[in-house]
Image 1 (tube, rainbow, N blue to C red):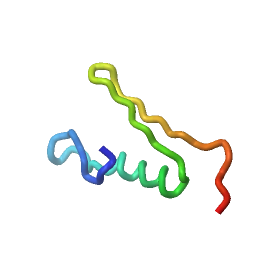
Image 2 (image 1 turned 30 degrees about the vertical axis):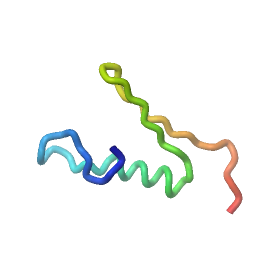
Image 3 (image 1 turned 120 degrees about the vertical axis):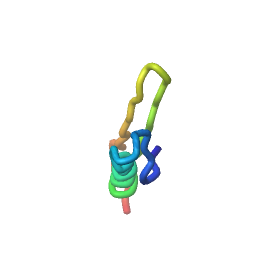
Amino acid sequence: MFEPFFTTKPVGKGTGLGLSISYQIITQKHQVTLQCISAPGQGTEFVIVIPLKQQAI
């Protein structure tokens, strides 16, 4: 799902880059986590977990 060009849309409708770019920015640039929680027929929830304290570099 977070892979570049993954899409469930028909050909020509979307690039499949939105979640991939979001995941890269969130996890690589900000060192936080992005979780996907999904249940068929109920929906999907994306959770961004931001630590209260930043780790020392």
